[in-house]
Length: 195
Image (cartoon, rainbow, N blue to C red):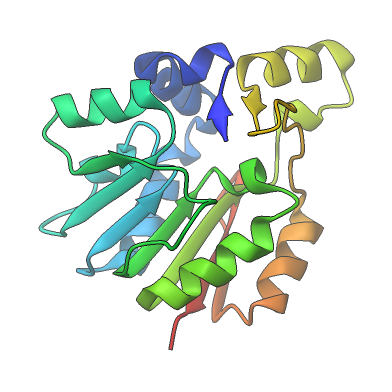
């Protein structure tokens, strides 16, 4: 999926919006991810602004993203990020594969993506997905603005407006036999064993 909303055209705007949305849970969220990643090599799918790198220690990090603006920004920072549409072909191997704030972009094929990630990971797949979303707000204006700012287009030109709720993510993690599920303020994190 390629972002066409404003926040997907500007890495700084994306990062600022994420900080605003997550508020006090922002740092807690990333520390929970780091705790699960440990010292493993990380491949982040739909890596966006690569914010996780600011929290990693000596981990080897690679990222994949379809958005050329985010890829160029990451490369300017010296990060190993490639422009790739992960819906096509195999996912490169890594100890830990991270799918962070982006699973909704693959709906309705999100389960296929998770299955591919599990085949490619030698250790674990960590998925952290928002389950409290402004795009799903009962307030029509708030939902419209949130969807407009974060619009994502599929290959067919459709707009991906699906957002997962907590029940859906819990069912998904149960389906994939997650060894751990943790609520992180806005997100639900699931840790799936690749072994």
